[in-house]
Image (cartoon, rainbow, N blue to C red; front, side):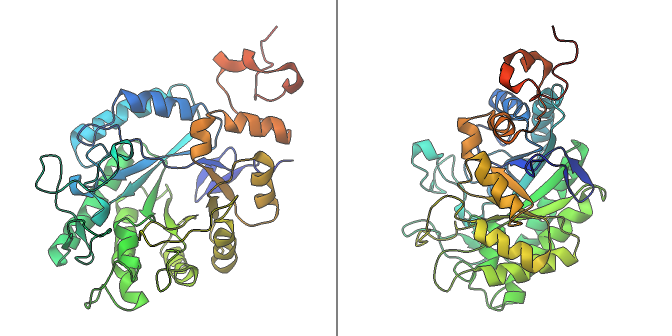
Length: 371
């Protein structure tokens, strides 16, 4: 039996297989609210056959958006718009849906990627002054962020809690806290971006303090029976930065607080990063974190082939596989993986007729009532 298509669960959340659709920003929201694009996009991914769909990084506050077009969950309008998109996706798919809550910190107020991605000055109408652990810009020539004081951190924590509460009201199945890719929580963790001299900077324990408070705030505001987990960057890929040893300490601390899983990525906090790219280039991080923490672990990063994904699971390097850009290119990647691995996958009855004869048992239930 295929490991990729075996049953799994995060906390108490049962999943039909171990394929996770990674959170991928669409830069298509209006004032933080989901649009028709999200109805179409999420509907397509919901029909993919994956076990879990994680919604794109969703800002907990307006100033927490990476761009003016980022999705948010900080207002009644945001909540209502996302409810519409979720209703459409759920009407035709049994897929479980989680949301990634985040705050861009010093990487906010940026143009969308296809418009260059550079920082928008706060003096422009669609820009704003970013906040961060320290008043250090992400890239040379950018406007320095405002260093968060006690009141600013308190407001950020309340924003996380309110967004988590809204996610609970929307019936979201789980929350992933974005602590990776150089965004606010990662900025507190990394000595590259955190130069504070108070209780939130310096030692590893201090740098972990705000991230742990974020987890506690989200966990307390979300229904207890639904899981909360964290996405981490296991390495900054910069000498003297955040690394896998510190990540293991962080993940163990999260585990003790009730974190249900860890989603292992890397990089994003510094333009000086030197990433060694290659197939499955982050899997070694996931393998080590899984071995040293025992927390359910999701691997991600240039995992593109079904056999590659299956091998990672069979070797015990991770518990689940997250697919990102590949599933944008091939929204039915789980169907093709199931065909390659001799497994079955969920698909809507409207699509059953697409099943090739050589894969007559590919879709669960597809042979019932068909002539």
